[in-house]
Length: 151
Image (tube, rainbow, N blue to C red; front, side, top):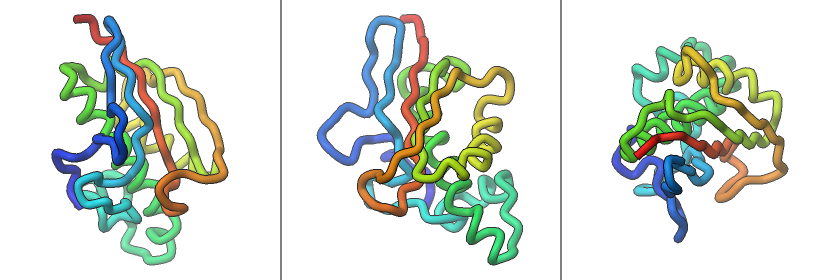
């Protein structure tokens, strides 16, 4: 699955993002393509360049264990990047993230991916473990973002 024009768009009737003055507030982004209702399940669902960047090993057991959270993390952060850019900003304008995980053991994997999107100064962050996420138990992560983007 490629990150296409639908990435970052809501799956229901709510705004994907809203500008309030100089701030951009993003709804929680999940690893689901809203155009096809396809959940990112692993490395095979993201572009090959991203797979290599994330360290796809080619070893089934390793890729099976790490692939879902790494691929979902990349997809969510890439969707945030695409959304922020559509509002006229860039990732360095994002100053706060709220990250929801089904399993906090996934945070170190996500953190590796996040460093690729925020190589200089990371945003302030809140990390929360939740028991369930919509639309399916296969969704391992959801991320909200707030950016400062003067008009």
